[in-house]
Image 1 (cartoon, helix red, strand yellow):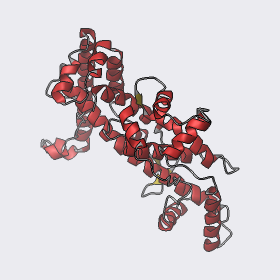
Image 2: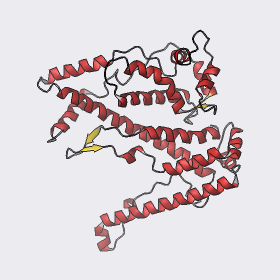
Image 3: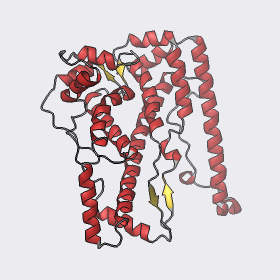
Image 4: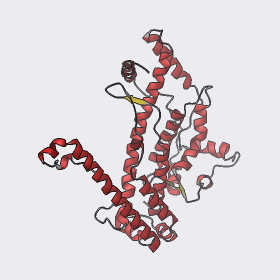
Length: 355
């Protein structure tokens, strides 16, 4: 995995995180209160530090030139490359890390104070909480063995931790989306509250079936999908598909890589087939979820080195595996919950005095 790609992938992560805003879908607690997914669950707690480190390294020409020469990396090579950064950049990175360490210490002190207050019995008896009961402050994104300076291990830990956290955020997003779909189905069924339960269910099935009436969706990242973008979006009708020109055309910032926003732009035409085919109000939450799922699918298939980017070699290798287009199933094409889940959701809502 090229170091330069790792650095750029920090920007990828920030881009994705900025799109993962909680929807209005709610879950219900044991008392029947609506409990929206908290903002903090959709954020990277150390995002400011991540962004500042990314900006410094992105602006350092010496570091970028050294990183470009690498074809693969290990931790030592990674650390050695960081040494090519200018003294000014290194000094700023050191200061950023010291500020981050102080922030983490402050968080730990506040957490300890809160834990001590909560364990009043310990305070009265003079017994300190056991280590298992002490709050933990996340420091996996820094090299804690060296709190004063920023080195290669810091950058490696920062990227590894961020990618891990992003996968967790994706899971939260999927759960929040299911709640959105459950609430949407419940609201639709309540329009027919005077009908029997079976008739309500029939109305819901008919409603969902109507949304599925759209043109065939090409497989995201497949040859048919890319050729359609080439002909209709890039306006290359009549010209043979040229993978190299296509890649360069959609590499908007010219860095030799397709980042998530550049890949997502390729799906706009497919999404329009789904969400403009039916003459109804477009559900932006569903469209965004389809976009996210297409992106995840393409990166799973194409991004073989798992750096959060698609380089030319990965793109070309995928084209070599061309096969018959099997299409794509959107979130509207398949019910996102079981009948049992909907029933349970309805029962929870019905215990509330107001809905």
